[in-house]
Length: 31
Image 1 (tube, rainbow, N blue to C red):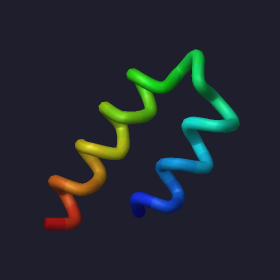
Image 2 (cartoon, helix red, strand yellow; image 1 turned 90 degrees about the vertical axis):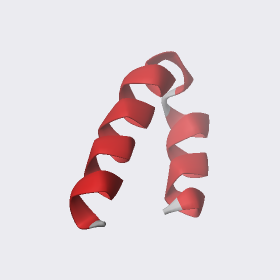
Image 3 (cartoon, rainbow, N blue to C red; image 1 turned 120 degrees about the horizontal axis):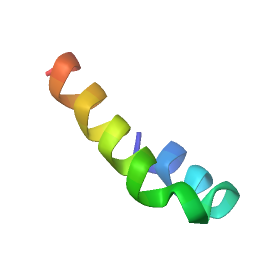
Image 4 (cartoon, helix red, strand yellow; image 1 turned 180 degrees about the vertical axis):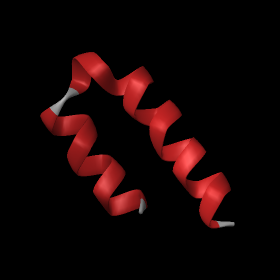
């Protein structure tokens, strides 16, 4: 997931905060 997160950061730096929140929620659901 970290690798994917890095790709998202490079692709959508403007929406980084929103994407981080979405990924965090997704990780919490998976865990």
